[in-house]
Image (spheres, rainbow, N blue to C red):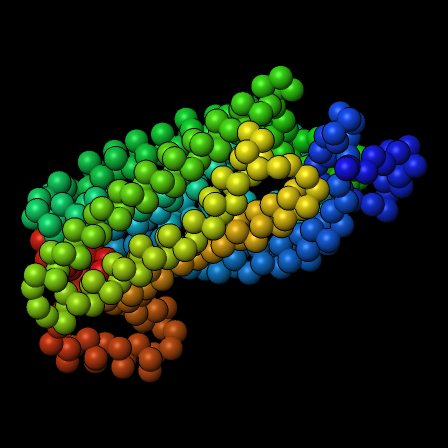
Length: 363
Protein backbone atom coordinates (compact mmCIF):
# COMPACT_ATOMS: atom_id res chain seq x y z
CA UNK A 1 0.00 0.00 0.00
CA UNK A 2 1.32 3.44 -0.85
CA UNK A 3 2.18 5.88 1.91
CA UNK A 4 0.42 9.22 1.62
CA UNK A 5 2.44 12.19 2.86
CA UNK A 6 0.90 15.41 4.08
CA UNK A 7 2.49 17.97 1.75
CA UNK A 8 1.75 20.86 4.10
CA UNK A 9 4.33 19.59 6.60
CA UNK A 10 7.22 19.23 4.12
CA UNK A 11 10.21 21.56 4.32
CA UNK A 12 10.77 22.27 0.64
CA UNK A 13 13.98 24.19 1.21
CA UNK A 14 15.77 21.16 2.65
CA UNK A 15 14.23 18.36 0.61
CA UNK A 16 14.38 17.46 -3.04
CA UNK A 17 11.99 15.18 -4.86
CA UNK A 18 11.62 13.47 -8.16
CA UNK A 19 8.36 13.38 -10.09
CA UNK A 20 5.27 12.63 -8.05
CA UNK A 21 3.33 9.43 -8.60
CA UNK A 22 -0.34 8.74 -8.01
CA UNK A 23 -1.22 6.50 -5.10
CA UNK A 24 -3.97 3.87 -5.10
CA UNK A 25 -6.45 6.38 -3.71
CA UNK A 26 -5.74 8.90 -6.45
CA UNK A 27 -3.72 11.25 -4.23
CA UNK A 28 -0.12 12.28 -4.82
CA UNK A 29 2.71 10.19 -3.46
CA UNK A 30 5.90 12.22 -2.93
CA UNK A 31 9.08 10.53 -4.13
CA UNK A 32 12.19 11.67 -2.30
CA UNK A 33 15.21 11.92 -4.58
CA UNK A 34 17.99 13.55 -2.59
CA UNK A 35 20.66 11.03 -3.72
CA UNK A 36 20.11 11.68 -7.42
CA UNK A 37 20.11 15.42 -6.83
CA UNK A 38 23.49 15.30 -5.08
CA UNK A 39 24.89 13.05 -7.80
CA UNK A 40 23.82 15.46 -10.54
CA UNK A 41 25.26 18.47 -8.72
CA UNK A 42 28.68 16.85 -8.22
CA UNK A 43 29.21 14.48 -11.14
CA UNK A 44 27.52 16.19 -14.11
CA UNK A 45 29.34 19.57 -13.94
CA UNK A 46 32.71 17.82 -13.59
CA UNK A 47 32.06 15.38 -16.42
CA UNK A 48 30.57 18.05 -18.71
CA UNK A 49 33.58 20.29 -18.10
CA UNK A 50 35.98 17.53 -19.17
CA UNK A 51 33.93 16.74 -22.27
CA UNK A 52 33.64 20.44 -23.09
CA UNK A 53 37.42 20.91 -23.06
CA UNK A 54 38.13 17.69 -24.94
CA UNK A 55 35.36 18.31 -27.49
CA UNK A 56 36.42 21.88 -28.20
CA UNK A 57 40.06 20.85 -28.59
CA UNK A 58 39.48 17.74 -30.70
CA UNK A 59 36.76 19.02 -33.01
CA UNK A 60 38.33 22.47 -33.24
CA UNK A 61 41.62 20.92 -34.33
CA UNK A 62 39.86 18.81 -36.97
CA UNK A 63 38.08 21.87 -38.38
CA UNK A 64 41.24 23.98 -38.33
CA UNK A 65 43.32 21.39 -40.18
CA UNK A 66 40.62 20.83 -42.77
CA UNK A 67 40.04 24.54 -43.37
CA UNK A 68 43.75 25.04 -43.99
CA UNK A 69 43.47 22.39 -46.70
CA UNK A 70 40.00 23.25 -48.03
CA UNK A 71 41.23 23.31 -51.63
CA UNK A 72 41.93 19.57 -51.38
CA UNK A 73 38.70 18.64 -49.57
CA UNK A 74 36.77 15.74 -51.07
CA UNK A 75 33.38 14.25 -50.27
CA UNK A 76 34.12 12.46 -47.01
CA UNK A 77 36.25 15.41 -45.91
CA UNK A 78 33.17 17.61 -46.21
CA UNK A 79 31.01 15.17 -44.25
CA UNK A 80 33.66 14.96 -41.53
CA UNK A 81 33.90 18.75 -41.38
CA UNK A 82 30.13 19.03 -40.84
CA UNK A 83 30.30 16.21 -38.30
CA UNK A 84 32.99 18.09 -36.38
CA UNK A 85 30.85 21.23 -36.57
CA UNK A 86 27.84 19.33 -35.20
CA UNK A 87 29.91 17.92 -32.35
CA UNK A 88 31.38 21.36 -31.67
CA UNK A 89 27.95 22.97 -31.38
CA UNK A 90 26.74 20.12 -29.20
CA UNK A 91 29.56 20.45 -26.66
CA UNK A 92 28.90 24.20 -26.53
CA UNK A 93 25.57 23.41 -24.84
CA UNK A 94 27.23 21.46 -22.02
CA UNK A 95 28.12 24.50 -19.83
CA UNK A 96 24.43 25.48 -19.78
CA UNK A 97 23.32 22.04 -18.57
CA UNK A 98 26.19 21.92 -16.07
CA UNK A 99 25.05 25.24 -14.61
CA UNK A 100 21.47 24.01 -14.35
CA UNK A 101 22.61 20.88 -12.52
CA UNK A 102 24.68 22.95 -10.10
CA UNK A 103 22.40 25.88 -9.27
CA UNK A 104 19.39 26.22 -11.59
CA UNK A 105 18.53 27.57 -15.04
CA UNK A 106 19.58 31.22 -14.91
CA UNK A 107 19.74 32.03 -18.63
CA UNK A 108 16.14 32.99 -19.37
CA UNK A 109 13.34 31.66 -21.55
CA UNK A 110 14.85 32.44 -24.95
CA UNK A 111 18.18 30.72 -24.27
CA UNK A 112 16.30 27.74 -22.86
CA UNK A 113 14.58 27.20 -26.20
CA UNK A 114 17.74 27.92 -28.19
CA UNK A 115 20.02 25.65 -26.15
CA UNK A 116 17.48 22.81 -26.03
CA UNK A 117 16.91 23.07 -29.79
CA UNK A 118 20.63 23.35 -30.52
CA UNK A 119 21.27 20.29 -28.41
CA UNK A 120 18.76 18.20 -30.38
CA UNK A 121 19.71 19.63 -33.79
CA UNK A 122 23.31 18.58 -33.37
CA UNK A 123 22.45 15.23 -31.86
CA UNK A 124 20.40 14.51 -34.98
CA UNK A 125 23.03 15.96 -37.33
CA UNK A 126 25.81 13.87 -35.85
CA UNK A 127 23.87 10.66 -36.35
CA UNK A 128 22.69 11.44 -39.88
CA UNK A 129 26.15 12.56 -41.00
CA UNK A 130 27.63 9.30 -39.73
CA UNK A 131 25.02 7.50 -41.80
CA UNK A 132 25.98 9.60 -44.86
CA UNK A 133 29.64 8.70 -44.43
CA UNK A 134 28.72 5.03 -44.10
CA UNK A 135 26.61 5.08 -47.27
CA UNK A 136 29.31 6.93 -49.21
CA UNK A 137 31.94 4.37 -48.16
CA UNK A 138 29.53 1.51 -48.90
CA UNK A 139 28.95 2.56 -52.51
CA UNK A 140 32.59 3.45 -53.03
CA UNK A 141 34.06 0.20 -51.68
CA UNK A 142 31.38 -2.41 -52.37
CA UNK A 143 30.06 -1.22 -55.76
CA UNK A 144 32.89 1.06 -56.94
CA UNK A 145 30.29 3.77 -57.47
CA UNK A 146 31.47 7.36 -57.24
CA UNK A 147 28.56 9.61 -56.25
CA UNK A 148 30.67 12.73 -55.96
CA UNK A 149 33.31 13.72 -58.46
CA UNK A 150 36.76 14.36 -57.11
CA UNK A 151 37.51 17.96 -56.16
CA UNK A 152 33.88 18.97 -56.76
CA UNK A 153 32.15 19.15 -53.41
CA UNK A 154 29.10 21.29 -54.20
CA UNK A 155 26.79 18.26 -54.21
CA UNK A 156 28.16 17.14 -50.85
CA UNK A 157 27.53 20.58 -49.36
CA UNK A 158 23.95 20.47 -50.63
CA UNK A 159 23.48 17.05 -49.05
CA UNK A 160 24.81 18.40 -45.76
CA UNK A 161 22.47 21.37 -46.07
CA UNK A 162 19.57 18.93 -46.49
CA UNK A 163 20.70 17.05 -43.36
CA UNK A 164 20.83 20.26 -41.30
CA UNK A 165 17.40 21.31 -42.61
CA UNK A 166 15.89 17.96 -41.63
CA UNK A 167 17.44 18.24 -38.17
CA UNK A 168 15.99 21.72 -37.66
CA UNK A 169 12.54 20.46 -38.63
CA UNK A 170 12.80 17.54 -36.21
CA UNK A 171 13.67 19.87 -33.31
CA UNK A 172 10.62 22.12 -33.76
CA UNK A 173 8.76 20.35 -30.89
CA UNK A 174 11.65 21.15 -28.56
CA UNK A 175 11.55 24.81 -29.55
CA UNK A 176 7.82 24.88 -28.95
CA UNK A 177 7.55 23.03 -25.66
CA UNK A 178 10.82 23.70 -23.83
CA UNK A 179 10.35 26.40 -21.22
CA UNK A 180 11.68 27.61 -17.87
CA UNK A 181 9.59 26.64 -14.88
CA UNK A 182 10.17 26.86 -11.15
CA UNK A 183 10.01 23.49 -9.43
CA UNK A 184 8.99 24.10 -5.82
CA UNK A 185 9.82 20.50 -4.95
CA UNK A 186 13.52 21.07 -5.73
CA UNK A 187 13.53 24.83 -5.21
CA UNK A 188 15.11 25.36 -8.65
CA UNK A 189 14.24 26.83 -12.02
CA UNK A 190 14.62 24.21 -14.74
CA UNK A 191 14.68 24.28 -18.53
CA UNK A 192 12.46 21.35 -19.42
CA UNK A 193 9.65 20.38 -21.80
CA UNK A 194 6.25 21.56 -20.63
CA UNK A 195 3.41 19.88 -22.53
CA UNK A 196 -0.31 20.68 -22.38
CA UNK A 197 -1.75 18.69 -19.51
CA UNK A 198 -4.29 16.74 -21.58
CA UNK A 199 -1.74 15.83 -24.26
CA UNK A 200 1.31 15.41 -22.06
CA UNK A 201 1.55 11.62 -22.14
CA UNK A 202 0.84 11.37 -25.88
CA UNK A 203 3.41 14.01 -26.81
CA UNK A 204 6.10 12.50 -24.59
CA UNK A 205 5.58 9.07 -26.14
CA UNK A 206 5.61 10.48 -29.68
CA UNK A 207 8.83 12.45 -29.12
CA UNK A 208 10.52 9.42 -27.55
CA UNK A 209 9.55 7.20 -30.48
CA UNK A 210 10.72 9.86 -32.94
CA UNK A 211 14.09 10.03 -31.24
CA UNK A 212 14.56 6.28 -30.91
CA UNK A 213 13.29 5.20 -34.33
CA UNK A 214 14.26 8.14 -36.50
CA UNK A 215 17.55 9.15 -34.88
CA UNK A 216 18.87 5.93 -33.42
CA UNK A 217 17.35 2.73 -34.79
CA UNK A 218 17.10 3.50 -38.52
CA UNK A 219 20.58 5.10 -38.84
CA UNK A 220 22.08 2.27 -36.78
CA UNK A 221 20.48 -0.36 -39.01
CA UNK A 222 21.75 1.53 -42.04
CA UNK A 223 25.30 1.68 -40.68
CA UNK A 224 25.30 -1.98 -39.70
CA UNK A 225 24.11 -2.90 -43.20
CA UNK A 226 26.74 -0.76 -44.92
CA UNK A 227 29.68 -1.79 -42.76
CA UNK A 228 28.78 -5.47 -42.78
CA UNK A 229 28.88 -5.46 -46.59
CA UNK A 230 32.12 -3.46 -46.52
CA UNK A 231 33.69 -6.05 -44.22
CA UNK A 232 32.56 -8.89 -46.48
CA UNK A 233 34.09 -7.10 -49.46
CA UNK A 234 37.37 -6.56 -47.62
CA UNK A 235 37.53 -10.17 -46.50
CA UNK A 236 37.54 -11.25 -50.12
CA UNK A 237 40.98 -9.69 -50.58
CA UNK A 238 44.22 -9.83 -48.66
CA UNK A 239 46.66 -7.19 -47.51
CA UNK A 240 47.64 -5.13 -44.50
CA UNK A 241 45.78 -2.06 -45.66
CA UNK A 242 42.49 -3.90 -45.96
CA UNK A 243 42.82 -5.62 -42.60
CA UNK A 244 43.64 -2.32 -40.92
CA UNK A 245 40.61 -0.69 -42.51
CA UNK A 246 38.38 -3.55 -41.38
CA UNK A 247 39.46 -3.14 -37.76
CA UNK A 248 38.66 0.55 -37.80
CA UNK A 249 35.28 -0.04 -39.42
CA UNK A 250 34.38 -2.42 -36.61
CA UNK A 251 35.58 0.15 -34.06
CA UNK A 252 33.34 2.83 -35.60
CA UNK A 253 30.22 0.67 -35.42
CA UNK A 254 30.98 -0.59 -31.90
CA UNK A 255 31.66 2.94 -30.62
CA UNK A 256 28.37 4.22 -31.99
CA UNK A 257 26.46 1.24 -30.62
CA UNK A 258 28.04 1.38 -27.16
CA UNK A 259 27.54 5.13 -26.77
CA UNK A 260 23.92 5.29 -27.88
CA UNK A 261 22.30 2.01 -26.90
CA UNK A 262 22.30 2.38 -23.07
CA UNK A 263 20.51 5.73 -23.18
CA UNK A 264 17.90 4.49 -25.66
CA UNK A 265 17.18 1.41 -23.56
CA UNK A 266 16.58 3.57 -20.48
CA UNK A 267 14.50 6.07 -22.47
CA UNK A 268 12.40 3.19 -23.79
CA UNK A 269 11.80 1.91 -20.25
CA UNK A 270 10.85 5.43 -19.21
CA UNK A 271 8.33 5.52 -22.04
CA UNK A 272 6.88 2.21 -20.86
CA UNK A 273 6.15 3.80 -17.47
CA UNK A 274 4.11 6.46 -19.26
CA UNK A 275 2.12 3.71 -20.98
CA UNK A 276 1.66 1.86 -17.64
CA UNK A 277 3.46 -1.17 -19.04
CA UNK A 278 6.02 -0.83 -16.24
CA UNK A 279 4.70 -0.10 -12.76
CA UNK A 280 5.30 3.54 -11.90
CA UNK A 281 6.48 4.08 -8.31
CA UNK A 282 9.17 5.99 -6.45
CA UNK A 283 11.82 3.28 -6.74
CA UNK A 284 11.37 2.97 -10.49
CA UNK A 285 11.36 6.75 -10.89
CA UNK A 286 14.55 7.19 -8.88
CA UNK A 287 16.36 4.44 -10.78
CA UNK A 288 15.27 5.76 -14.18
CA UNK A 289 16.35 9.31 -13.32
CA UNK A 290 19.77 8.08 -12.22
CA UNK A 291 20.16 5.85 -15.28
CA UNK A 292 19.21 8.69 -17.63
CA UNK A 293 21.86 10.93 -16.08
CA UNK A 294 24.61 8.31 -16.47
CA UNK A 295 23.67 7.05 -19.94
CA UNK A 296 23.24 10.56 -21.35
CA UNK A 297 26.85 11.24 -20.32
CA UNK A 298 27.89 8.21 -22.36
CA UNK A 299 26.06 9.69 -25.35
CA UNK A 300 27.93 12.98 -24.99
CA UNK A 301 31.19 11.03 -24.89
CA UNK A 302 30.65 10.07 -28.51
CA UNK A 303 31.29 13.69 -29.54
CA UNK A 304 34.85 13.38 -28.24
CA UNK A 305 35.42 9.99 -29.84
CA UNK A 306 34.56 11.16 -33.35
CA UNK A 307 37.77 13.15 -33.90
CA UNK A 308 39.77 10.08 -32.91
CA UNK A 309 37.81 7.55 -34.95
CA UNK A 310 37.30 9.63 -38.08
CA UNK A 311 40.29 11.93 -38.21
CA UNK A 312 43.26 11.30 -35.97
CA UNK A 313 43.79 7.76 -37.21
CA UNK A 314 43.84 8.99 -40.83
CA UNK A 315 47.35 9.34 -42.24
CA UNK A 316 46.38 12.29 -44.43
CA UNK A 317 45.01 14.19 -41.45
CA UNK A 318 48.12 13.49 -39.41
CA UNK A 319 50.28 14.63 -42.31
CA UNK A 320 48.33 17.88 -42.61
CA UNK A 321 48.46 18.33 -38.84
CA UNK A 322 52.24 17.99 -38.80
CA UNK A 323 52.47 20.48 -41.67
CA UNK A 324 50.33 22.94 -39.70
CA UNK A 325 52.47 22.47 -36.59
CA UNK A 326 55.57 22.93 -38.71
CA UNK A 327 54.29 26.26 -40.01
CA UNK A 328 53.79 27.46 -36.44
CA UNK A 329 57.31 26.29 -35.55
CA UNK A 330 56.07 24.28 -32.59
CA UNK A 331 57.97 21.09 -31.66
CA UNK A 332 60.39 21.32 -34.63
CA UNK A 333 62.29 18.14 -33.72
CA UNK A 334 59.10 16.09 -33.50
CA UNK A 335 57.84 17.46 -36.82
CA UNK A 336 61.20 16.75 -38.49
CA UNK A 337 61.04 13.11 -37.37
CA UNK A 338 57.53 12.73 -38.72
CA UNK A 339 58.47 14.28 -42.06
CA UNK A 340 61.43 11.91 -42.36
CA UNK A 341 59.21 8.94 -41.53
CA UNK A 342 56.69 9.96 -44.18
CA UNK A 343 59.43 10.31 -46.80
CA UNK A 344 60.87 6.87 -46.06
CA UNK A 345 57.53 5.10 -45.78
CA UNK A 346 56.64 2.78 -48.62
CA UNK A 347 52.92 3.07 -48.01
CA UNK A 348 50.66 5.99 -48.61
CA UNK A 349 47.16 6.34 -47.24
CA UNK A 350 44.53 8.99 -47.78
CA UNK A 351 41.68 9.59 -45.39
CA UNK A 352 38.77 10.45 -47.64
CA UNK A 353 39.01 9.76 -51.35
CA UNK A 354 35.44 8.89 -52.29
CA UNK A 355 36.49 7.95 -55.76
CA UNK A 356 38.83 5.28 -54.42
CA UNK A 357 37.07 1.94 -54.61
CA UNK A 358 39.56 0.22 -52.34
CA UNK A 359 39.76 0.98 -48.67
CA UNK A 360 41.51 4.33 -48.70
CA UNK A 361 39.59 7.16 -47.17
CA UNK A 362 38.98 7.99 -43.54
CA UNK A 363 39.96 4.40 -42.85
